[in-house]
Image (cartoon, rainbow, N blue to C red; front, side, top):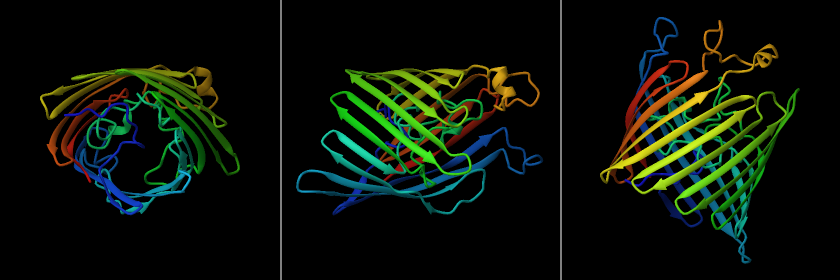
Length: 330
């Protein structure tokens, strides 16, 4: 089974059907989710529920006589979690212009931090189980401040930003910018660089933001060693550090097994006094995210774009989840 290495949620490719300059692709996934944080008597949600998603992706493109390419992308997605049914909705569009190794995107952009290799798991969901299991495996997710960086939104409008990407040989550079309107406007600037040499990829990214607690720096080193894949990653999330180690191996021609461990440091007491959430263990009112998270994921390739996916994850706040289901792309 071929491992999907160094891919982000925004860029994982799927098979597509071409019609002139319009391509339609997507995937479906459905299965069972056990989450011990749920309690019907407390929050009205059963511990075991159905989780599912259906995504259709539309890619349109045109090319001038001089070789400049224009493209656009948007998605329709229906998702259900915790037995709460969800209808389909279109997301915000992304527009792009590319020439040779240069690309400019505007609208619902990918984001420099999001596009950094070595931060998501090498699974079809980029996380544990059938829907990612909240992505505690990502070193940028700390202290309930999850996904506080610019990223392509599959179910929402996105950030309406602009980004510049350049690729040549084994190098990729990425700069992104977005601004938010409102009573308290905020800007985000992200920069990322990655280089692949042989079977190894090194990468680093940084985000600077006007919003509190959103500055972050990430680094990763990942290797594809044939039957085995290995990776280490680290992030400074505005004073909260988190590191992770990851490994996966092919078992025969159709199976892959992946494991991860991450560790999150405690928030500074001065930040808590300034209004930041508290992740410290043994503190009243804390979200208790300080410490280690770990998980294991198994995938079995059924052929034809379909696979069985199953995974267990224990979060740093002692939340246990187990998920199993089917994923198929088209």
